[in-house]
Each structure stands twice: as C-alpha cells, then as structure tokens.
Length: 102
Image 1 (tube, rainbow, N blue to C red):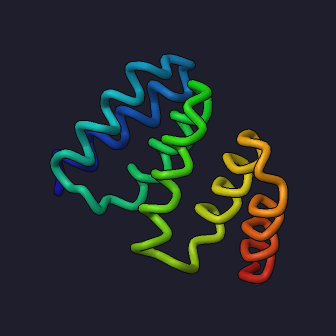
Image 2 (cartoon, rainbow, N blue to C red; image 1 turned 120 degrees about the vertical axis):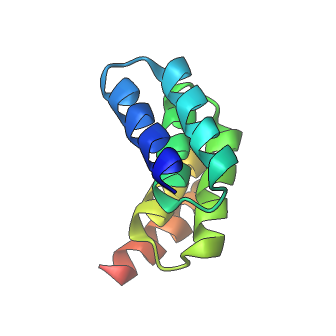
Image 3 (cartoon, helix red, strand yellow; image 1 turned 30 degrees about the horizontal axis):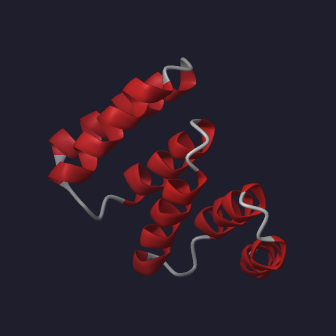
C-alpha cells in the first residue's frame, strides 16, 4: 500500500510539472501494485486525457466508477473524455450525473 501511494504521489507531482509520459508510467506502476487505487485511477485518466488518449482515459474513469459509482470527479472527467470523443449525449449524461451528486 505504501509503495502504491508513493508511486501515485510521484505521478501527481510529475503531472504538475507537465511531464505527462513519466507521470503515466508512475501511475501505471502504482496500479500494478494496487489495481484498485482510486486516486491513481483518476490521475491516470487525467494524464491519459492530457496525452490525448481519450479512449484510454475513458476506460480509466470507467474503472474508477466501477469501484466508486458516486465519484463526481470520475463522472465529470468521464464527461470530458466523452466530449473529446465527440460523444455529446453521453458526455451530457455524465455531467448531469456528476451534478446530481453535488
């Protein structure tokens, strides 16, 4: 658990520095240690989005939602990935679900 958290924190710091490929590698390593790490799933999706890997980002957010169906952050980010994929009505549905939780 501590190893996964350290890799997750490192990934977030690399993200903040704009080093997206390195951030993704660190987050992937965190998930290899702890596959259901909610923070790492959310951050991996955000990093994949920044790398324009929209389908992969959507899958990360969906994995998090399978674990935490009421995660407004995952729903919002899922909507953003769907929007980038030009799946307008699906994006709107995700945004609506996120807002309903607030």
